Image (tube, rainbow, N blue to C red):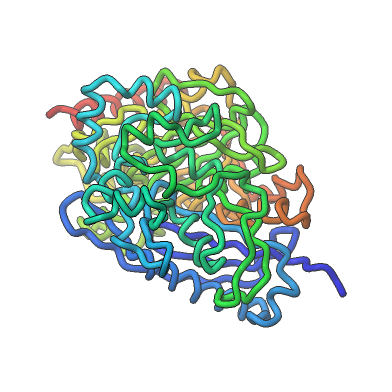
Length: 499
């Protein structure tokens, strides 16, 4: 009997779920996508129905298998390993007895615990939190979300302490359901986003658990991204017996999928937000510019450190220009519009719709459009929305080089917005580095599949980096032009922060 030679990847994102069947070379044999409902119970609050997310995984998984010519009966004979990658920081709390959530999932975008973070910061605990977790005190992360759930759901704190409730990020929730409740685990990359995990000791931190009132009994086991987490149960969409051998947070999955496994290598994902990650290797280092230190994957899938900067509103700024201002009908129009202008006309858009992320971490900043004159047109605003992604990412890249002491030679890119050649050239000009775009720009699922391949033994360490280069963008703008563009951006950011 031939050994299984295929891999599956589940990419559970913020607005939808994708499932893939791939071969050992990373070629996609079948895929499927489904969106799910976004809930906004109050301004700034964002929730998901965890059961609907599980349903979307089941549906897309079955469809991807069909597209690849497989069924739940035949899949176990052909799939060597299944990998999960997920929206990070989103928290689910569920009953172990019947696998039912006790509340909707609290999404990473949710700001309901911002005041709690402000109070903790005022108490002077952030330096301790940063030393242990590499993170800042912000509602973005899981710790205060978990605290809120345990406090607000009647009886939850007592039940969790007794071991009756399970708490985890989306990967843990999916693993639980895929294994029929047999496995409650997560990987280092997801644990490192919780505000509860000491990334140097690589263990849940008792002091932080006490600070956020989260019982250890409710938390998952933590293990390497490429390892055996369990096997699928008979009730799973893919049938019984497929090893689950890869789990990784979405941005670390993209870093691995891009082949950024050596110190100094970096990638930027252009999606709803923008996420820039640099591999630091085995060296733990805190940022002086309030970037994040987190855990990522080395060549063998084991934990290494990475520095990360998050832009909350990236491609979402273009969506706002499309849906809110009605200036365009599709995002694809933006490249031609940007090319139609000789320059930006002094117009800048700072999309601080939910505050500013790194390096500012200013939750009170608000979006602004600056530099408008009678000569300004809709095209200038459209260009400014696209350019804002390059400016925000460029700030992160500059800070990252200063913090790490590593010189960046190239920036690898992925995500939907990187298809825009004008944006990629703009990024190369503003940052002064070569920008490299692969043929396959959806690298998140590829990273998860490759880690599953390592964990299952189908792939060997060093297999990362199989992506083919599609286009390389070299800096070509003059120094004086670049300085002027940056001056305009920094002035606009200052205006967005005036409260």
